[in-house]
Length: 372
Image 1 (cartoon, one colour):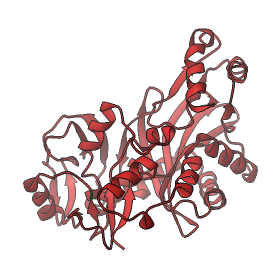
Image 2 (image 1 turned 30 degrees about the vertical axis):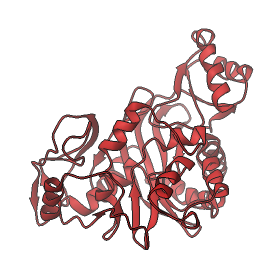
Image 3 (image 1 turned 180 degrees about the horizontal axis):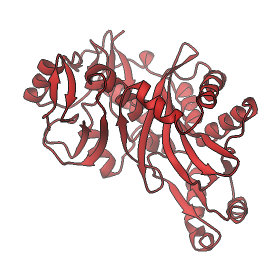
């Protein structure tokens, strides 16, 4: 059945409050408006996009040059399946407001399960289960701390430094770097984190070599591996962009840093564990963020977080496979507006061979820039 897509990047923040009418920070609202047309790039033929308007000339150029066959929502919900960037009470409200029947949307019990899966303790549980099943050492799971004493004890026992994370947050938000010399001054901040979300996740600070993710899709209780995402972060994990290359090239780059046998073992074990953990509570794309690190005893941090939603990694994988010429390599970046619907890509037979293209339409506050 065709899908109606909604780009809703603030979904992780909406999950934390668990309300229908969530008011996002202004920056998140501007990002959502700028990226409203991103589903044009990852939706399937015949799907539709929930957006408040698209530059017709820009869209026509995309159709003519790249053959995009995703359409704009025309107000008719019949025959469509709701497909937000991520599920929450707030994202569900968008679909009910445009006419979807409650019978065709997740009920409160289902959303509660998805919200629970999205808590970072799920990632810690999966990391523990994964470590038990592997024949080689990996980084330990994050520790959930529910009071100040637990936080202080963890920080003091990790002289290399610690990162504290809110259970529901993403893209570097809700993260605090600390160590034994800073924790006293930062304790008021920690108290605020505990007050807002009842716990924090604590993990050591790593000597990071590379950020990447394994991409999966859950469907009818079965977990399918879709490929790799190699991405860039700033500061404490704030998303900056992705590498654009074939799956073969991305995998080869990772295998040069980490033995393929280890990554394959993690991939296979994760599929089984995710099926067990998620059951039938969630269907759709998900990503497991990972790190390669330079730490004594292990190379791989296999479960940094799990995003039970669409991700930029999935977007970049689909964009590359559909619209980029074989062998071309480049970068995808999310930036404050740097172009007005830039389209100076070299396109041949519907495939981009070089140049650059902004996946956001003209007039947006952010650019989603692919450069080759």
